[in-house]
Image (cartoon, rainbow, N blue to C red; front, top):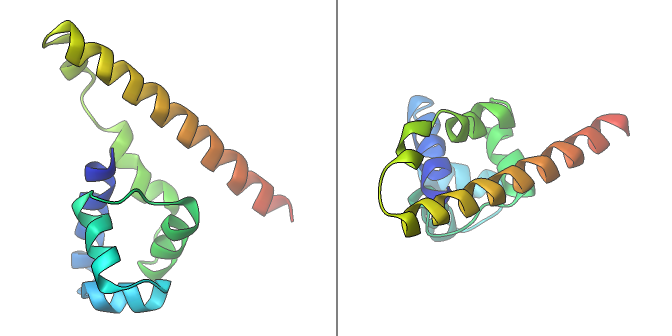
Length: 110
């Protein structure tokens, strides 16, 4: 999941012709930490995701949409262990998106 989000953020950043350092400065993190987010080594919080979306002039949904575009067919193939792991990843993603949605709804009500 982190890799998908990171690659999507990187693609959006490159489309805007921003450097990693420019984005990192604007969201208030080091370039190294931002690079780890793009590489999928670090998880991204809702706060950082919102800041990145703002800097790149996109919606949070424009970034997280890549998670919905993952082909579902890949969950049908492979060993049972890999399938079980994928199911747990999907559940984690569901709850993360649910939490993100609730937090954004709460912000909109304020």
